Image 1: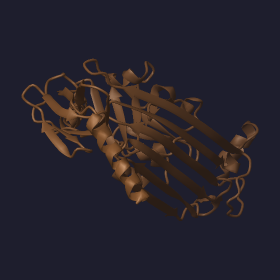
Image 2: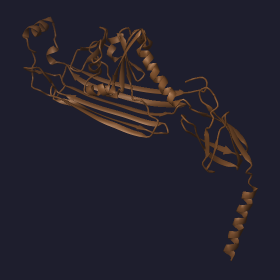
Image 3: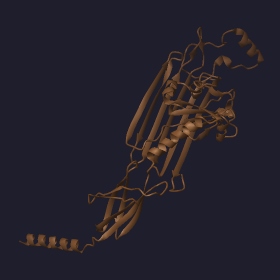
Image 4: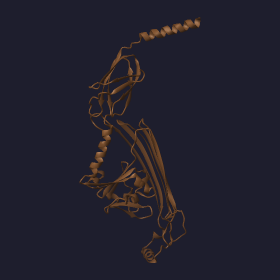
Length: 379
């Protein structure tokens, strides 16, 4: 009997509290375009806790009546818009303004038109190497991949030291921009090549002519722009493994990449490459001390929505390259003897060892970037 009395008392207290709660609040507002601040008609506002939906009128206006004090989760949607969710803490009648990204498809179209415009500029000649072609050069160097473009050749001073040459110019006369960062290692001397893993590129642009100067006043030969994979704002997990073997050098390379994208805007990217080759062979003898070993990895973490985003990327490239032992001379007499010998003066058995003379490279790159869009102002 006492338990029933206590239960009845609790029910009466709850009913009295519900009756006393003020549920006369009004939530009203407008839904507008993020870009031009125009009103969006027939946008739907769904209140999850009430399972109630209202639509905006011709002026983008909506109103919700009879609301109580509390927290409400609203889902806003409109045709051709990116859906948006917001949380409103209601302690009284309130008026809000909601901005929606109304030109998602139009923005993609504008981006495509911009590329077409650049390709047809009278002062600019642009050639793009797509990912499908770059995969064929997975075990090669950036300089090797660029030779597939008309007007681009290569300058080789070793089995893996390949510098791109655009219209006869190279080094500091050809700018290389990798994911927004200017690479200058190929400018140190004729024996230095770009320290870039070609597997990290989604596409490569070779820009010739006056428009290449936008990347630097010294880029009179042209500019090579290496572009990473595009960020996808939806739940996606993708990856790939590419392996390559070659008989000359008796080795090969393997590359693995993984990309994890979230609809919330978070994403992670990683690419790892390893390459190992032994001494190269001429038809009749071994080119001693031409072995090479290369390791590279790229890591990226970021967050991206339409209104704001930021990312942090780190890359590391390490390479050890053997230099043909017979090419190392001490004086002019050694040079004359090497030229007249017809064959290298040093010929050893095949090996994967990298002895002196050799070149060792370790290249670090760290980049942080962020952006914010302001309604009516820009990015």
